[in-house]
Length: 303
Length: 303
Image 1 (spheres, rainbow over the protein chains, first blue to last red):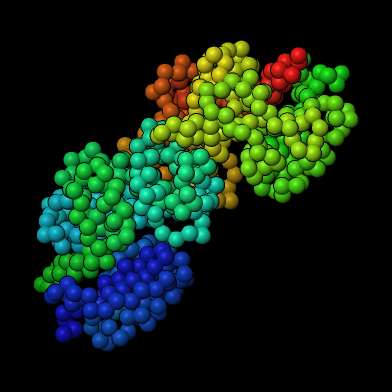
Image 2: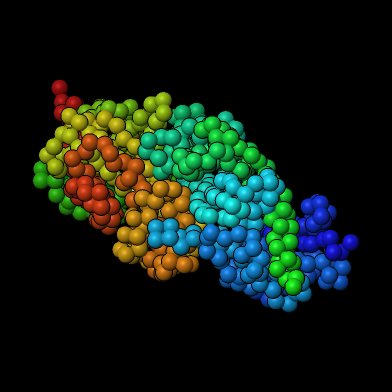
């Protein structure tokens, strides 16, 4: 049985997420989450924390572990390279870095783009993009991976050809919690759909994002935008601006690879431009990506 | 002598600034600044604080005081109306609100725009825009008033016809102090011109502002952008984006009405688009605006 299992870990700045996976079926047999992200741990705590979290899944170390995300950055457990695009799963599999202090555990490289006018970096989303491709049974797609730093990735012939980061999620938090404009939204939970749709429309203002965000204030004062709708409005302006800036490419459809709640918001934003959308849960994409990676990894290691 | 003097106060969220002015020459005879902005005072402290600050200039109450800025908002000393654009100095002079508890002291109204797709508000910048017009001896201009919430105002026939707020300054602080992208810039002073110019160029990235801000991180990791240049880069991206979003109107030139340091940055951004610029110090604009307002006010009160 052990030979059919692997452990996929997505370890980021704020979260640790681990999945025990049946690699034959792709099924998630068990999962574990915590807020022990990179920020919460010192450099020497990674192997101990990881071993303790995964011990009862590992069958004495025989079940392999693949770790993706910021865990491979300079501030993480051990730095893994960032490969230049275009790159495929084979390239990632060929440059896995053994995790120091833990047997049969590998850290997955990230990707980078180093153009004259466009420098960009990712860690973790590449696995999700490849996983989404596998789940859809295709080799070509435009994927949007929404989050703190949203990634828009183009894939062709099964390789990740190029990508662009949009700092939408991080800006949303900065505006909501650290500006006058976001003040009425504090202490309230959730995204109000009416506010969100108003924000989507405001994102099309000819004066752009820097003005549209301020309308959260002027509409709250004079336009009937209630305090309960300000967070939704800001989210709509930012996600609407992100989508506007990424459209006009020649995509037939966009594969959304995020949490169900983020996917829903991005679906609304894309459908406002009549762009067809496929939704993939980002956890499922991580599992599928790691399973496909492990296959390449083991094929590569057999004589 | 007293009849030739007035006191102009610009009282905002974070600062109190007062000027004793010779209204014949427009000269500033004395000035006083503090950080006792709206945030620092409770509602009943305004008259006492103001009286104490200005006592030795007032000649027993005979020198009049005009107060502009957020002091006239609901959170200020006493709410003054916001007049709809288009509006001129006569309109402001006709709706001055006596400051409760202080003789011969008036709070200046703000302005608002209530369009279907554009709601906007200002308090304080209207006086500076009218002042800049008076200083330039013209009745028609496009003014950019950079700051926490930058205002772009169109003036024609001496009236303020329309305006747009861009939340550039507030976003700069939120990104610099409350995101991962801004992290390398903390604890460092000043704007590095090399970084600023790189940011101006990055603002033209086809993926727009949400991506260009993230380049502060990818260039810091892989593009040789030193920690000492990150603040300048972020400022360049934001001011560059603001200017890009406001160009393409038919202005012959832009009158910049800000602090000398902000004017310098905006001049660089505008000159990159070959837009001629006139710089006016915002304090001088406040004085000139209040002197022109007081003239209308007294003319209106004479039989």
